[in-house]
Amino acid sequence: MESEELHSFAFCEAISGVEHAYRITEQADHVFGVEKDGVLIAELSFDSVWKQLSGNPLENQLFQKICDRIEDHYAQ
Image 1 (cartoon, helix red, strand yellow):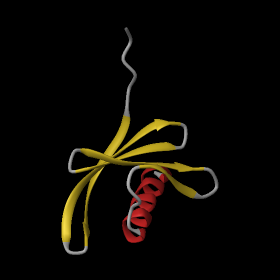
Image 2 (cartoon, one colour):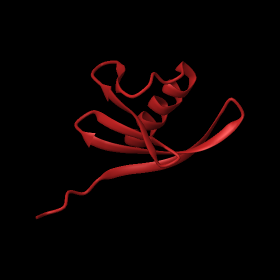
Image 3 (cartoon, helix red, strand yellow):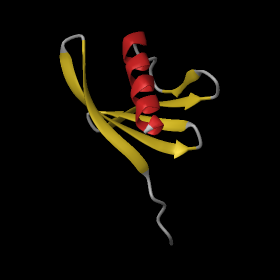
Image 4 (cartoon, one colour):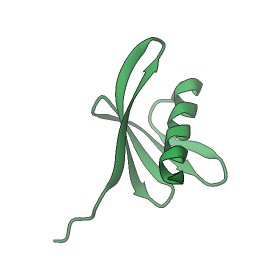
């Protein structure tokens, strides 16, 4: 069985004074898994606007920072 290459990147972000390690993994075209400290917490998608597809609702500040990081990463 052929393994598929995962496209992911990691970053640290402080929210409410606490720093966490995040990893973003592109799961499908415009769908991204979000891990926080090694645990999958959400899936986000982009189709002209960002939407959260799964997981507990992210705080608005965190949601926006994650979306900004994804956009910055793929703009390079």
